[in-house]
Length: 249
Image 1 (cartoon, rainbow, N blue to C red):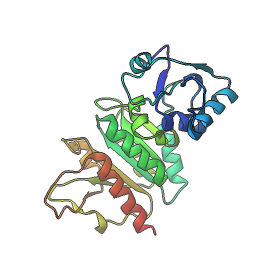
Image 2: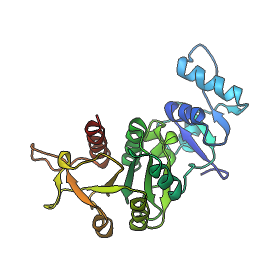
Image 3: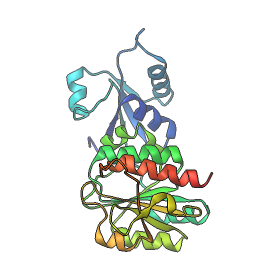
Image 4: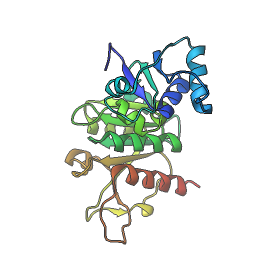
């Protein structure tokens, strides 16, 4: 965070943040203009000029420090913080869509996993994502970078209590399936995901917390015939979301 805002970095995240238009942007760091501009960089530069953003240049060391040594590709954008929505916004959207999909992240702490999930969520067109306020990563610039900017198109609610949030979403018509490797879990493909579906993803290492697990209607496991029982949360979520789409044709 710098001066009440934050710096997004990387060409795709910056371009998508500008295109989505959900944040207020004030300044941008770009390489000096010249013959080295490719099409993407030219689009970013044109959009920054159109918006009358302050356009700055920095040397590599300055930009490394500004982005906390993230993979910035020479580009950074000063914006307001991530535009979270309210849980009721997601619930109302789910009530209005009989094919709603809501993803609940149960205390994930790795911004790479969260970003990967948001990228898939944007591709699939989920109704919303719910994350807890404590003991979990927020939608940080690192998560936005990992999402390749997909985060800018996803409705994300930040909530105090996940089981209470799940109860509110159940009132909106969702049934929740938690990804799990326990003995009580059914093969994921055997669960009916037609209608309003909620998918719950447990934390790296610890899996689903007790109260969240108890609030799931089903537990689903991904088949792992290779005997290697470990997929990271981002990959597991992607497989599960595309299983939901497969069932819906």
